[in-house]
Image (cartoon, rainbow, N blue to C red; front, side, top):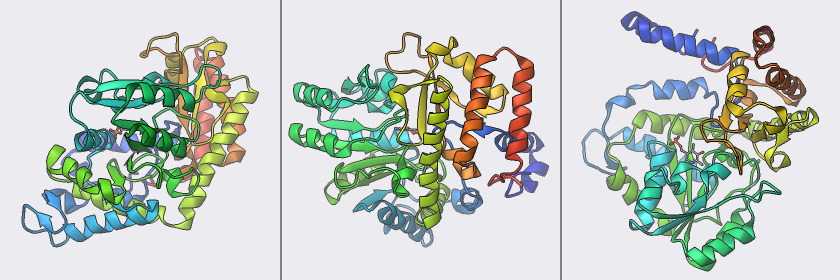
Length: 418
Ligand SMILES: *Cc1c(COP(=O)(O)O)cnc(C)c1O
């Protein structure tokens, strides 16, 4: 059963309640390897389901436009103070509705339409909002993109520097959605300083690893940092912008009144709860276990002949190029889902196939680590993945695997289900 119990919902709206229960059961029964997902704690779930959703509070603590902020102000202040402690930053804004609007606020704060932004190309692992052509950020700004080297699958910092010197961006992004390797924040900072660009580190994927000390921090290198709160950080769906003191005011103004109206106070409370969890020693253990699990899974997959982009991983994320396995990403992802292993098909760098039918699979170990799986489970997980990918059309194999996975997961409680 969903936890906390949804008894009122079940009687008021059985149709929605039934779907919510079924989704909770689905999350319980599957090995969830989508690199941007996780399981939040029941405390975070409870905070998101509170009466805070009833309240409007445009503005910032002490400077609101509506009355009745006696309790909203301390909640938002707690979230901000905890963010400052967890990440060691001068300033935090916890109001962005999600990662994409957080990034849009950075453009609004520091660029004029038509100014040049430089970010990682989407097919190389960057995010849409780093200036990719189909995004508003690629339509309203002049965008130049760096990629990865074909031979290493890694960012070439010499190439980034050359491009920056030639194109003179006002804003540079580092970070992305499908980068299996450590981001070299000092090297990006040196280039941004040389060309006079604002460096924004988008740590959406790796925020939890940074909070737990399992990935280097951009603080002290990137004056502006954006992150979602719901990926490895294991909070509610939301986002934060963090910065040094010099960039604080422009970011706050860009979020409100520049881009948003009232903040989502139930989300703010849940962010505060998640940051409280992230400041505990157990969270550091979790973050290091996420990386250890990814590393062990990468090793086991490599031993089974899988071709990993960049040859492995330093963080929570693995990108598989399936070309040598004779199957495309999409049918492999569908077969795996039917077999109880949930991940996403993904473009690989220099992919000869189309974005909607690419060559790769992306997976991450955040959620399975929260669930309690350890390095000892990774060889078996690699075996399941291999068996399904090489027998993708064999319904009996998929069914058998799904059953084996259900049996394993029965020993690992899920927050939000019980
Ligand atoms: C997920 C992600 C985002 C966007 O977050 P949403 O909450 O989905 O809008 C932005 N940047 C990076 C690097 C991401 O991984």
